[in-house]
Amino acid sequence: MPDYDSYIICTTPRSGSTMLCALLEQSKVAGAPQSYFHQPSLKKWCAGLGLPSDTHPRKIMACARNLGMAGSNISGIRMQRHSFGFWAEQLKTLFPTKATDAERIASAFGRTRFLFLTRFDKVAQAVSLARADQSGLWHRNADGSERERLAAAKPPQYDETKIATELSNLVAQDVAWKTWFAAENIESFVHWL
Image 1 (cartoon, rainbow, N blue to C red):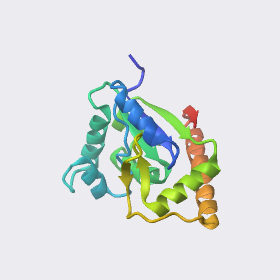
Image 2 (image 1 turned 45 degrees about the vertical axis):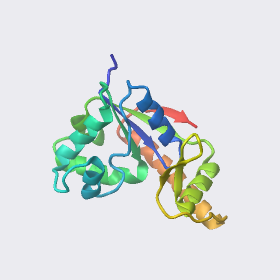
Image 3 (image 1 turned 90 degrees about the vertical axis):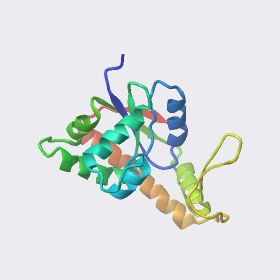
C-alpha cells in the first residue's frame, strides 16, 4: 500500500505528460491523472468535470479527486505550470488556516507526492509547442489519427521568434516549478523525457 493518497504530475506543455497520463490510467492502479484544473476559471473547471457552473470550489476539488482515482486507491492530477497560480489561489481561499501550498494541497487531496516531468531537449519542446499552437493539432493517437485538436487545421510555418518565445517561457516555467518545490520543502520525483 502506498504511503500517499494522491500524486500531481507537475509539468509544462509538450513534455510527454499526455502519454504518461494515458499509461498511468491504463495501468488501472494509478488513477486517471488529467488536467482537471487547466483553465483559470471555476466555470470552466465545472464544465470539464460535468458539474453545475455554480458548484462550490470545495466540491470541485472533491470531484476532481474522485475522478482522478478512477476506481483505484490513488488520485492523479496533471498540473501545467501556467495553470498552477489560479488553482493555488482557490486552495488558499478554501484552507486559509494552512500556512503553505503543500498543506493546502494535502487538505484537499490527502498525502500527496509530486512528480516533476520535464523534457530534456527544450528546443524540441518549444518547436513542438509552436507547431501545435499554429496547426491546432495537439495530439495524435498511435495509429496517426487525431486525438486532440484545439483549432481549425492550418499548416505550421517556421517562426523563429515564436520558437524563441516558447523556449524562454518553458525554461521559466521549469524554474518556477523548481523554485516552488524548494520554497515548499518538497522533494519531487524528477523524470526527464
